[in-house]
Length: 414
Image (cartoon, rainbow, N blue to C red; front, side):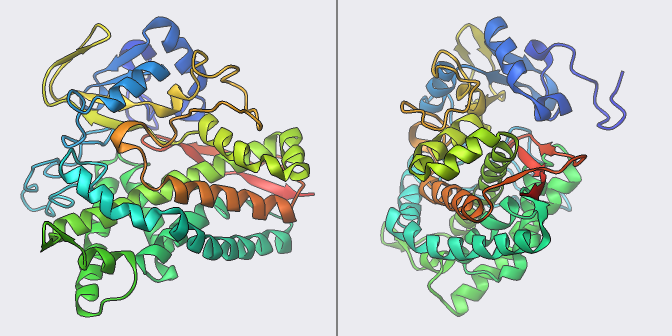
């Protein structure tokens, strides 16, 4: 039997045949994770080329930190890439060249490439630089809130959360704000629709084509943006190779947009559906710091992957070379053995060692930026619109796969 909408057979056993693109998983994965922790706790599937899905905090963090057995340089996508687009591939006949011969370092790289490319990114994401970006972000959020106030309603996912990170990243890259809708679609193609080969290739090609032109332009006319900074940087006394620069810029686009808008959207959905939490945060703004961390824990959006280069046995699971291990950070953050009342959002949770940004050497280099965007987005909205709720009869939709978050959250003000 095949699902009419997806063309894929429905999941009958999450422990042996899971599908992270299944509508049930996208809509409400929490019960599935709870079941798997009791039964497995590492699930397996043959779908999408075969992969494993750990669900406990202990297992996910152990795998994330073990870069010898679970490398990143062999592929980080939760599904196989389009033909010719995998690590080390030269491109499919008649198709585009692989999306950046060096991948998207540092996240897709192992040392030593990982080490020095991460070092190049960190200054751009330093607390001091993020403070500078906050001015732009706050002005942007205020403009977006103006529209909600004018209309008396709006979509806090599509009309607010989705609009913020793409413009902040564009500001850092030095690209026109008019490109924001195009960037959004490309990133959705690559992540949200990774299971659709045609859409995924469209996103890959779009990003590759844009970056090629942007790099050419910066070579001819350098500016003070991130692209120009990389082009003017050196490693071991030599300019950084163009494929590495393109990969690092692509990473900023892919990793810095959908992930953060999903986090913002999830937080806004929570505040729209949990009035007690919303009113408490309005009345006790000193809770914002712990609340941001709790939203990140409870609604962590990102599932990364590692692809094995050799056979590994982990927790009794016979993992084979070529298998993907899905770094299920969202499930780890909901593990009751790691977090008391893990299924509850506690705005003043004091001990919160969540892994929304990953763990080990690949922990997100842009965490300072993401935290700022989430904090400012919430602050600016609830300060001016302290009362809002889901629109009666409105439909809330979620997207999933490598990044999970709400795509439609219609609200009314007051």
